Length: 285
Image 1 (cartoon, rainbow, N blue to C red):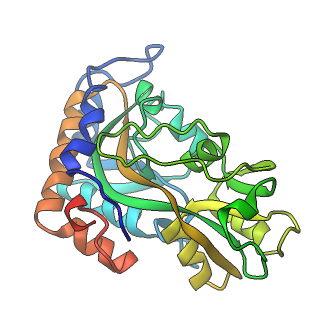
Image 2 (tube, rainbow, N blue to C red):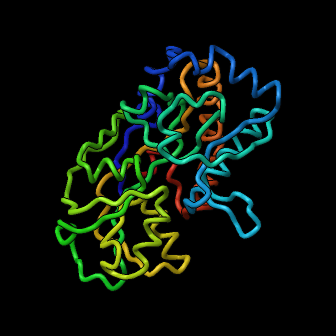
């Protein structure tokens, strides 16, 4: 896979422009509040998606697994805390103003300027391509064949923005992209997996295509979904840890922690475990 990003530090430059400590309606954290609470209670509450493999999912026993889960577990371990999971809808996570309901999102979130109005992005931890998936019986052979079609995406995510043609990936070093598909209808879902569930019913039955992270599509195919990848990736995303505004100390601690995980090779090993390739360093792309 060809990514072409600059350094991780450059990609994360957006994050600390928003760490000035702005609060929202008096409900965001005060300086040091979240970090103090996490360290005192020895508990880190992480928002995640229970149906977004291989990033995050629940096994048959209800245990959370996946790349994002392992990254969150390692962050909690280095903070000396136990990790607890909650699973709010994606649009609720990206809306910010969490009110202390959870402390962190390790959820493959793209650090855009619009999201930085309500969230802080302390650390980019990996990069991923966005691709279209179609049913294996689809006759579509190019992106142009998807023009005017029904396409499914997770509501409020960057794939939704891409189809709406208002996507802004503002992290420095992210490569330029073009809008190559004019969707006839955009159908939004709570998670990518829900879109895949409709697409698996047959070509054009409910959907003609879905747009998601390439590793997520590949994992669905590996799990038996009758899908195939359509064409080359349409854009590439830096993915970041996210926290609510208001606690610069907590954001700085997370930045330091993730960078240590990168330098000692832990992040790379976790990426290879779940993707078979190190997606965590721009130098390898």
